[in-house]
Image 1 (cartoon, rainbow, N blue to C red):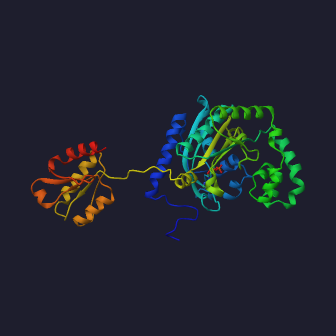
Image 2: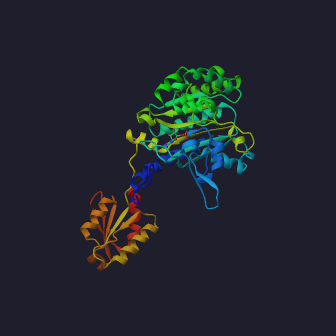
Length: 423
Ligand code: AMP
């Protein structure tokens, strides 16, 4: 147990970190294009924030939170998502006093006591954005485009964008009644989760994963028929902007999302080859949330993208670029006689900004050359005893195998120029 990471968690090893950084870089660059600024909130929050902000009837709150009591007897929870925290910070830091919209993005680990499987973990990472302060569908369209642009920039094709409107507190009660009327006669045949949600949150019956219940849900009354004029106009406005931007989408009336605070727009982006965990991105509007957690009534919309799933998708399509992990110079120092000189030269080169390695273990010349090859060194600087005695070193260009003798006092200036011209 001591040598195994907890179930549902995993190490991101040095050989994988480059891919993560590439993903994060792409996300950051596109956020900059769209004017979204990064926010970093604490990894844990008061449990109450998630009870309020996510909703007590959701799977996340009912079954999946990592909640603990700290030494000061406070109930804290490792964040299962970042929207509630971002909104808490928006209110706490009075960002609503700034001109709207407030556009935020985040990247970081989230924690859910989920059943681990491919694409589903207990510690996973989300990239997400939140846009606060705008009521109209134009910002909904903007953040959907942002998500699509990121996935397309990473090279993913055949993405499926699903959109829906989940209505608002004005029109949902009518739909709720209709849903209950429709499901009531079948309740006995439905799963336990559906039975318990029937009264508390019947909308959730539409996204049950049980095949029998899914079949039933397919025939359920659509929310579309119940949408109020405002929600209808909002949804039409969004669809018009998506069409104008040339984004393909499908309307899926059963897309309800698991979280209670969603209003109007809900959307999901799927990447089918991922199989059971095909949702790479999900989001929607949450006009009631800011008030719910104690801020001034403010509209908001956001999404979260599962980083592990995006990575699985781009790896499966061989879309990761080649990363250059080569070093500039390996300083070879056979025997220990000249180690101090080798160390001094290596440090001087590093101070000039070069990537430099040398041998720490007093290995043989042959072993050091092998190590230089393994690190894909562009140059090898050999400080052999004979050369050093003459005040020289041997410089080997590893791509041409050319070797020249250079004076020790010129090592830094020559290598700096060589490495620059190599690039
Ligand atoms: P949610 O916050 O549940 O709307 O999820 C947003 C996105 O996060 C999903 O579309 C997934 O890509 C990802 N995600 C959610 N839960 C997990 C998990 N347990 N493991 C990995 N990715 C997840």
